[in-house]
Length: 144
Image (cartoon, rainbow, N blue to C red; front, top):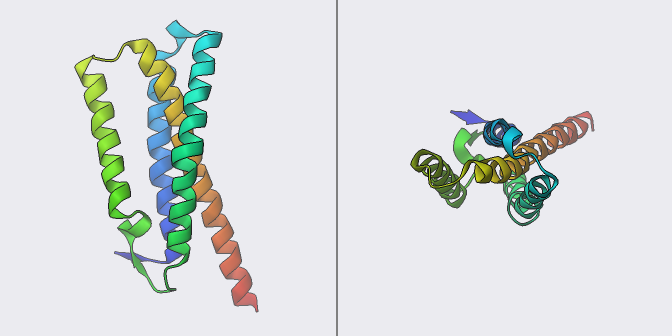
């Protein structure tokens, strides 16, 4: 299935937003028993590190790559490159394995997943913002 290149940004928005929402939900469900100022600060630190050094850069990189595509329909999975799909698969497998094995204590799940999920959700929202900007820009070009 092929889509307009701007639609790839919307797909990225939906994929990262859904992943972020789900991981954040898991973290928040585990949080009540471990609610403390220290844990909230640690979650904020996890969020800041992942947003600043991973997901913020990822959003910029993929938005620039998608924007550089020619204005012809693109295969819908081109919202990411191969490396990004591999990273996503590794993160999903690691997270599922970590929780299923019981190797990580519940407090880790609460703190880490809340920070990570919030960063992923923000990445999804940023892709959505970039999609909206791209659509507005293309509409302005059509008016000229």
